[in-house]
View 1 (spheres, helix red, strand yellow):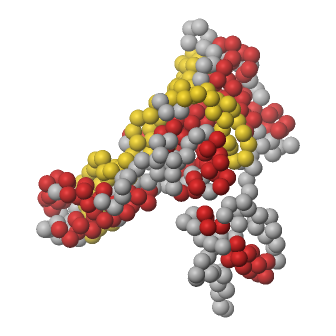
View 2 (cartoon, helix red, strand yellow):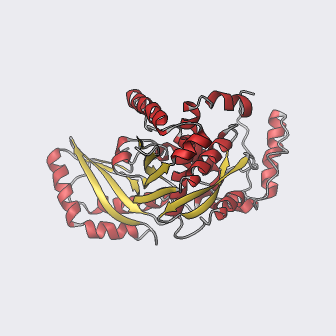
View 3 (tube, helix red, strand yellow):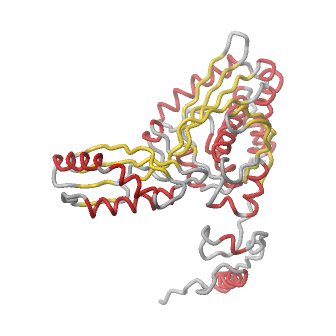
Length: 390
């Protein structure tokens, strides 16, 4: 049986005509008319570099939450937040959380680390040769760094971590990448420098892997909790007693008691996040703003902490060690995604850390809302009334 090939235009595959040819192909092969998929406002040429065999756009509802008050180092003021989702009650819940945050004086966000990694591995005949390679690497580090950085006007090799294991050296090269997420950027830089290493190291390299697995690209790892992949953001909010009582119909002590139980349960289960549902808001926010949606895996992980204060307020903190966002490159230039970014003034240079702080605020809003809904006994009822359960 011969395989039928998807139509392609070798001269220019990113035209309306090329997309139409593929939609016609789908209809011929499956009988499905892709009329809705074929309706889009972005110029077709913008999709080049984002999607192959382009046929159209998948339309996901985008809801608006906020405004949310953020007291950040980079995000300062009130922000309207776009969330792309098909889950009923999600936008309403995040909107409620943002109201609680804002009426309590806002969420304070602080950015710490900001790195993107590639993790090559070099295998030798013995551990002694691993040691010799490490010494040679140190002696030639300045040149290796220069060669890596020559591939980009943005990427800077900040430091290299190393773990010798048996006869193999596992490495993690940490780069700063400006306002791009940087995975492709650091891949190119590391590949170029590793090629120079293989040609110039005087000893024998038995085997080389572009990735030894320790970069944990599109995977969560404990290493990311300790050494951030992306941006480490800590978010803090003190929910006022009156906001908890009037808006959430809870108290700080009741929320704290519930959190004591769920935090221990998360640890018992081996969960990568000890809060409510960080991935929910991050995924919706990433899709709306043109982020790499697979980076939800790294970005959602983190630790949370609460303390009921003597005055009836509730202090709450989130440490999100690996938020991966971009305000340049990737899907950020697509029409609707760019509109959503511009809504928050998060397009272009100098805005990625701002976007990371807004991402953290989204996580805060979702956790505040869902935790209080559970404590108040309103979680199931809200889904019955507004969500899929209806």
